[in-house]
Image (cartoon, rainbow, N blue to C red):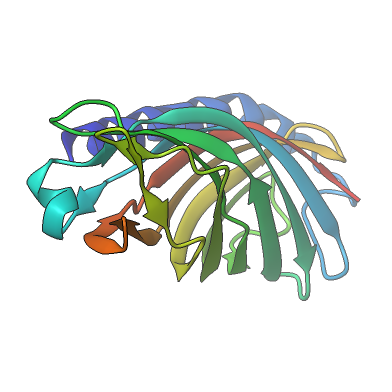
Length: 214
């Protein structure tokens, strides 16, 4: 929890710094400032995925955990109205699973997320937004093992997602973005047909990047 708080605080500082540099530009004004119905926004971010992992059953007993990962992420937002947008987020990561009996190997995670957003101050240079939606996670290239035996996992997971972010417009088309998401995902594990329990991953995802309005 303390690590998550530090990540949020660091991202907030980045947001405030970006707002400081964006503020002088807002005074100039422009008929092309802001976002409006029919606009497309495309963002490319560097994100840190910080799982809040916990397991039950055998996974809980051995202290199963999931490491952090830093990867690229791309998203596409369509503005249905001046304030309401629909965003599809795409990215993938390779995460290592650890435990108090040693490393358990890695697994690929592909978690496309669809969010309904509300954008504040749509005509301004500094535009906060909030979002809520659903996440589908595909687990692939499973390399998990324990005691020389392969660990099987469920390949699919569904869960909710929440989001808070800010766009800082720097030109008519280009903006800087800071974003925080909480995503709920999980998988059941078994070995030799025997259940090992459920591993809840539930990462906090902190991102910083750039975007373009079309």
